[in-house]
Image 1: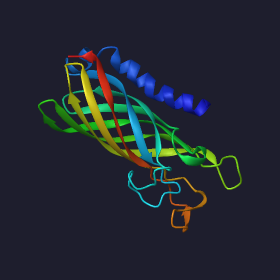
Image 2 (image 1 turned 45 degrees about the vertical axis):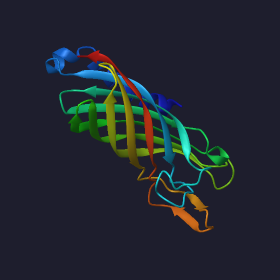
Image 3 (image 1 turned 90 degrees about the horizontal axis):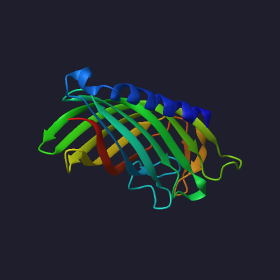
Image 4 (image 1 turned 90 degrees about the vertical axis):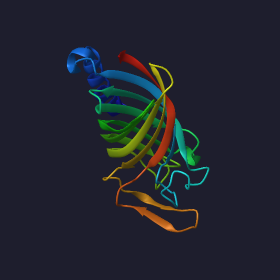
Length: 206
């Protein structure tokens, strides 16, 4: 729990610092958004496929995401997120992550803005059936690549869709069996990925 609190501080402190004076930092171009999403992820643990839609209906992980976006200028910004995938999966499986990193706007068309992002932080996993033999609970370094599309409904409210592909390079869990009964080992990292949809609100900025 202490580690998770530390990652939350890692996300919130930069947000608080940059939010104090966005206009003075970038000549009035900066903006600070915050909001929430609902996420559906393939946890890549015991799944036969890599797509977030091909993991089996009882193995997909679901849960809320809290996020902020600090847009430094017209194209560059910083994104932070905390995601808790604690719902739906069989056997009490859970994944969480706390990530922070840069994002770049590559498309703007009327009210639509699309971004690419690279995030770093930590991931936590509880495998199904924990604490039974052959299960685990642990934290790992987590990197993520993703793309986000925001569509402005008003000057301060936007709806948002997001795809994210994560890589936990140091993960090495106990072997599992997929839906075809084939043995799967996890000695080369874990690659959760999924989609999120939600709403963000502009707290500061023009």
